[in-house]
Image (cartoon, rainbow, N blue to C red; front, side):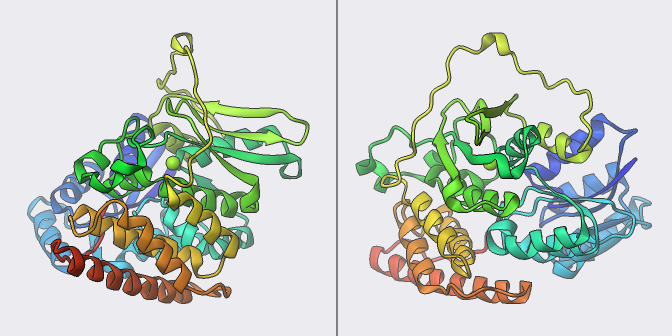
Length: 401
Ligand code: MG
């Protein structure tokens, strides 16, 4: 029986993880959950799963939940809150596997603490690896525990890497659906609406990652995530647009062999893989191979999607550059979702914030969070300038999935 803690239980990956656990009641037990601000969903999860501990993002929500659980006869569930609550869930003594799925840098400290506490961590939160990947992977190595990618591309790479040794890897090919604007002329980008950007062609995901997919920043983050997870330089991680999203990624070996992984586009599969690694177990997620007709591939257009270029540059430069990349993107995407800035402003704000940040090595999570706050302040100033100039609504943005 694997005992699981989920960071981000009410989000898209969190719910998929619970759905996997539901299908294998004799294999997985849910021992601790960290929810965000969705009180109703947190209450329902507490009632269904009876975790030993549940954390809410805000203290008032924790108070309300505690009362409701008491009324429901579930007062044995310990309710905690804030970052310290998330850390307690991540390091819960009864958990041996932690799913890190809080969107954004909010899950950073808890993910690091989970690794430090010797848990096996399934990483769905790519921002953790973008901002603090070197610290997190170094700690996992020290602990002798694997970091198992849940992001579909990296999960695919992880599977393909079982076909050879790391020193036999020529390069990694990360596939990208290209997002909803793959075929839209760049001249029309300035009038892209929030609704258009939220309409992803193949995957149903949280709001931030859907916008990040539309700008290709998500793929930029994934390049950095791959560098960190598999200890490869950015030059060995290539992106390939593949609109069908059938091939989830590939690994090319030095002899010229290329291994690809494909399966249904359902996040429950990478989650199941991570939860059961190094085993594979029976599932009903079948890909109809006989229906496969054609697969299209083309290189990404970095002029049309500057976010991807900026991500490669940040990955090469290192230091606080990738922290700033993530922080500025989080702020810019939130501002776009609120209608404060246009679609084309997103890469502009990010590029400015990345240029303004440093390249020196960040030695601790505290330093990472400092650099994050600084980049966020910088991005907010730029957003404010834009709203003043354009007369769009001014909103102070806090991001959620
Ligand atoms: Mg992905």
